[in-house]
Amino acid sequence: MFYYMLKYLLLGPLLRLLFRPRAEGLEHVPGNGAAIVAGNHLSFADPLLMPAVLKRRITFLAKAEYFTMPGLRGRLTALVLRSAGQISVDRSGRAAGLAAIREGLEVLAKGELLAIYPEGTRSPDGRLYKGKVGVAVMALAAHAPVIPCAMVGTFEIRSPGRVLPRLRPVAIRFGEPLEFSRFAGMEQHKTVLRAVTDEIMYAILRLSGQEYVDRYAADVKAGQLTGLRG
Image 1: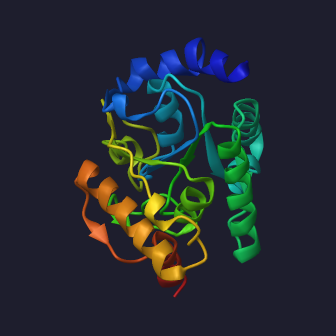
Image 2: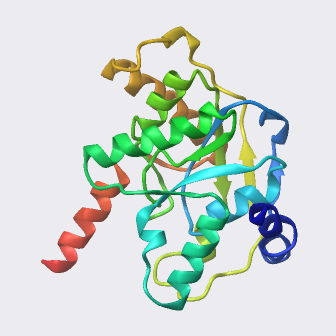
């Protein structure tokens, strides 16, 4: 109930007024049944803007840090995310990654839409980074199609060093569903998981037009922090 209040009465109208999101390829999002929407991640606004243009409810695997931020802003953020049915994911360690996969599979088992950012974190510089294989594990285990999605223009909403968000139109592009039935039962094969993930990332790349970097975004961010400390 609260999800639809946010979407249609509270947050959704405000987002549409401020950022005028333009949706492209909505016909590629199935009207029912389990599916994974896999997208690039450029801004804090991404998981707010995508639901604003979709007719169906969609659940995000949200990083645990969003639920534990300090202060009034942190408490409000956690309240909105929990009320909207978003799932907190601890991204530290292999066990945490497996827990996130289990949570995602539960959403898909209900025949719902699940949103995933295969990069695992926001892009530090607007480029598209190497995808993690969790999206492939879920797609194969749940026999679910993957709809590639590209957020275009959201990086500029709040680029590094900017305090206040910039109000500007954005586009949200959905591509044709990818299906991987040819790999059924092979979700334990690392080479298959890598191939599936790379196919998904290439589809996102074609939609977004970003420059691709064959490294994990988290590693790049860690290197930047190390350089600052040094």
